[in-house]
Image 1 (cartoon, rainbow, N blue to C red):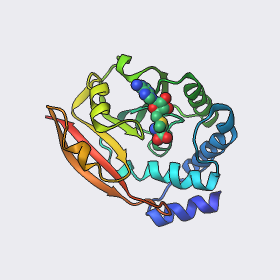
Image 2: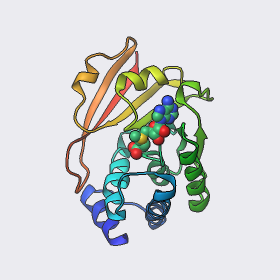
Image 3: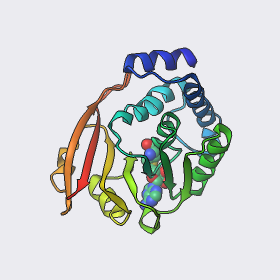
Length: 206
Ligand SMILES: C[S@@+](CC[C@H](N)C(=O)[O-])C[C@H]1O[C@@H](n2cnc3c(N)ncnc32)[C@H](O)[C@@H]1O
């Protein structure tokens, strides 16, 4: 798996310390080991997990601003765990409503020794955290409208952003953004060996 990760990282132009690469591989091994018991992902092949989960998450890293994030509807920790591994000076709250998935996240936290993640079981609508976040992140969670309406009460700093990882450019969802929210940027992401388009939508309150 190490060779495959190295070649994907090289193709993406990402350099990481060995310790972070070992943690990313350790995370894939845990996903693979516990997938059946916890029903974590439809991706069964660890090599495909590297492409569709690890690379797909970490290509977002250069576009994040700040150090305190929440990954809403994180499921098995995507994109939050890979981002927390390669961004050890940032803190990630990993939120999901399903107890089984949050139990898996606690196991990952413990086995990989991650000090910068906090798994939380809650529906996002009922979660009242503090202090404020620099960014609210989600992947495969909800339409932009639902994400923003379920997350609007989360405390986000003045310069804070909403980051939504999407497949195709979601022009129809962008046409009906709620009042008070504006589009900052849509970034086309390049994920080596992944078929199909990936986009990062960055929104901010105005
Ligand atoms: C399709 S999965 C995506 C998981 C992960 N982000 C990924 O990219 O693989 C959506 C996740 O959102 C969680 N979820 C759905 N509605 C939620 C809510 N209102 N509050 C918190 N989590 C929610 C589900 O339990 C599920 O784990």
